[in-house]
Image (cartoon, rainbow, N blue to C red; front, side, top):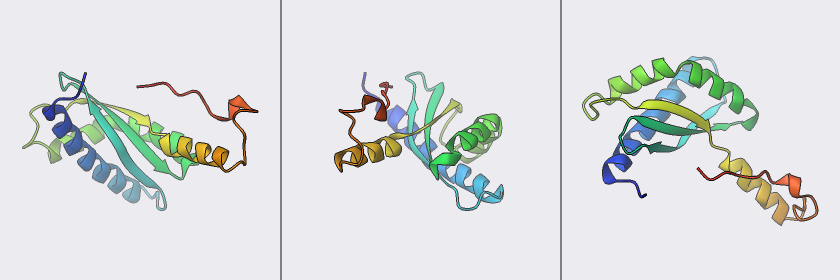
Length: 131
């Protein structure tokens, strides 16, 4: 089912404000040199849950950053609610996930350049689930 205009609008508002909140908390938390971006936000039909896909650079810090974000989810939700209080009545529950699409694309490009051959070694490219 396709997203409604309302879902798309809420997702874009959340994406913009979440990117600012996460980047500000990263720089204030002493994590200089780490880039956190919100690549996608998907809101459920009833607007109660927002799935947030976060991209972290460098990739080796992604799991650590995601753990920190999920442990501070109530604080992030509160900060986001303060920013969007004139646009949203209720703040959706936030679920955070790592967006590994850039890493996946990089693996495909390496394979196309001939460095690794996924036909000879099918374990090189992980199986991806559709979400």
